[in-house]
Structure formats: C-alpha cells, structure tokens
Figure 1 (cartoon, rainbow, N blue to C red):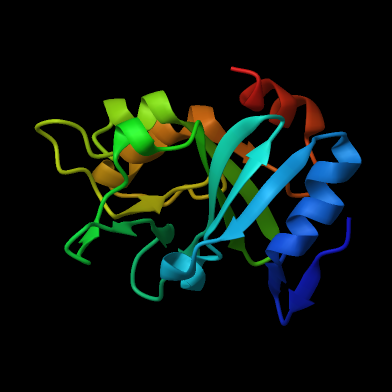
Figure 2 (tube, rainbow, N blue to C red; figure 1 turned 90 degrees about the vertical axis):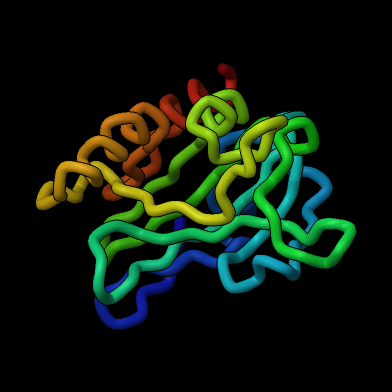
Length: 172
C-alpha cells in the first residue's frame, strides 16, 4: 500500500484508503458520499461489506496528547448536533496518524450508544472526541481510562495492514 509522507508524518487520503486498503483486502466498497459538514476530518459515508460506515480522519492537536475528531450533522434548525443513534450507520471508523504510525478505530454503533457519544432519548450525545491509540503511553488518568475502553476497537496498522483483525472487527 502506498501512503504519502509529508516530512515525518504519514498521510493517506480517502481515495487511497479505499483503493489501496479496503479493495485489495477483498472488501466491497459502495455508495461513497462526501460529508461536506465534516470535510476538515475527511468526512465520508459508505458501505463496507454491506454495512454502513461513517468515516473520519483524526487530527493531532498541539497542546493535548491524543488525536481529536469531530463528527456532527445539522438539525432541522441548521444547528450542529451529535449523530442520532437511530439514524447512525453500523460503524464509525476513524483513522489516526502520528509520525510514522497509523491505525484505525472501528467503533460499532452499540458502543457509541453505550458511551453516550451518539444522541439518544435523554442524552444529547457528543459532537467530537479525543482518541488514544495504543502507541500513546504518557497519559493522565482520564486519558488512560478512555484509552482502556477504546483499545478493544483499535487496530494498529503501523508496519503492515492487519487484515485478519480488520475483518474480525467488521464481522461483529
């Protein structure tokens, strides 16, 4: 797989992600739609192996450890709001990069509901979150707690694509 390198950072555009990552692994990818409201985070919706996916690329921020990603949509009043659980896809896939390391968080809808990230009756949800890949070790207590639950949904792809783990995550 080819990934671009800009100085010391690994960068993969969404067409590369699909064409050089999912398709060679035998995954079917259909109905790719850009989400302009989250363009800054490479917002996409697509079908992967027949399952609905919302995709984002997280960003490294200068003052805090971990990566940050926003995900929201406009409501009928044209205001930003968290994704609604009943209308959300099967997965939220977020790619993270840190220098020469990269990986993906593949969150099933159910965990995002359980962690109050998706909007449900009585819970307004969240429009963004911080992610802590397994290569981050110098974390405060709150970040460690978040990393602990996120760990199950993370696939470290540094050094080669872990296709077995990717397939396992998408077949849950």
